Length: 261
Image (cartoon, rainbow, N blue to C red):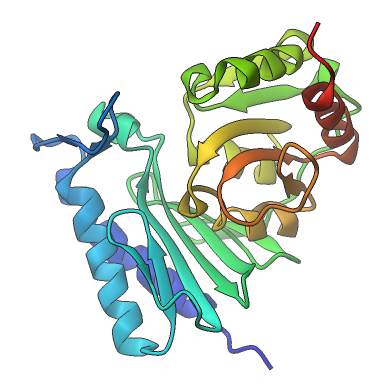
């Protein structure tokens, strides 16, 4: 029988929030991790991941961890935690509340539990792969994707068009031209909105495992789908297609797979 890790998931989110919030909308140094381009990191990212890793090590010393800031540890363990302490650091340093703490747990390589927590707003989206919930204050309610007949009725999202290669940008363009509404710039929040029934499709590329694996159990638990661009269930990073309605997923896969015109 699988232990109940859900209370500990909330404890990790609490600790991350305590580490992050003193630095949000405050003066802080920003470092660039990228050799080319701009990949920001701050003390908030590092402090939050360090706090969560210390808690995991103390409570579950035999568990592994994959974190964006401090790398992998014991990845061959049965249970491996996947951490992105501030998903959306660009939004964070811009003072925008469209960032989140991503916390996931894998068992034997399969995502089994995940959370998107936004401590500034006080929202949490979490799921087990078979169920998903939203919490804010005393409110707790199930998450459910919405019905959508196809791309022409869909809201489509990607964090930025610059995340795609030239070939991928052309593939994404097919969806962009057909979708009813396209929104950029939401990082993990767009995925949370798929689970909540407000966005129909998120298409992204170049992700790390910590960017998407914590999200998989939430969207699946809300009745959606998360695959790569070939329709393979999502494990690890790279290309991601997350949808609510199966009809949107099928249409998106067809556009992404279409030959260049």
